[in-house]
Length: 426
Image (tube, rainbow, N blue to C red; front, side, top):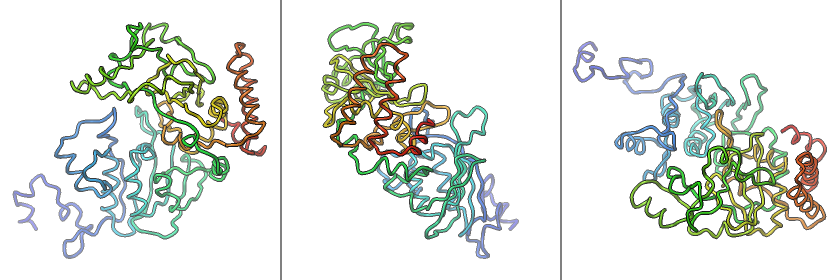
């Protein structure tokens, strides 16, 4: 053994036989550890916060990690994903794992590694909503599992370290819910609201505004330079039932009044590799009666949508647009602005929460929001109340009218008094 250790090839090298002989059998084969505990680095190789990764290093990850199933795609990878797969391979059969990881484990980008884990291990416990590292904006999650496949495995799920545990079956994490690791403690109530209603995607056209990220100076202007520029209704201009334009920030900074829709400029930016804007095939989505929905929530943590029939109201990607509705557009507006909608979107994962970041609505999940298709007096009453709220100028009456809409929406979804109390806590 001393001769082997003295061999030049092992100088400054990590060798299992020397460092952890207990993880090998008598033949020198790796059999794994009883326990793996860790806190992996939170480095992302994708998104606006990405760190640089050498092409050869990236290629190694693609080719050597099993959770990456499509080896030819442009995959979103982070170090947490890599550590999670590697941890399973370091454990012996029935070995136990405990890691503190970034809350992004719940995000869409982590779907493949979640799928890998659900299929390979028995998750024993998930504890969420931790914030234990000073200076780290995002939250953390404690994840525990055993390296085994257990039929009907049950997961203990805690919303915080001191909270009560709730048990859920691991098989509830599947393709139908994008292998989501978050469990809803009001799942039966959520299912009741979802019911057999239409989804937003069934009853309207829902699309993002213009994506001008990274090249805003090419599209935003203080003045309307020519007819390619239009009134810029951005997320900060949208509140429940009303559009505030220009808002206080625009007035103070004298900027972002107007937004350009110009396919030639978009093409120029792409051809000169200046940026990657995507403003849409045409601007027809803006030239119609529409609802404008903030992608980031308002300061009070609620959804906010406003009605516009102004064909000059254009928006960027921080705003979602609804038009071409088969149900009355102002009825949909009332439902979206209701307390029920905000509560449901939180519980159903339509709103994405990350500690240190403003909550955001994800458009693909918003398309799944349930809308009752009922021809009754309640819908007519909601529309009347919405018209009253839009036309009302006395701010002291806003809350009263919005409460009236909330009560009508509760009736529309057939909620009980107890269920209404749950929603009213938001």
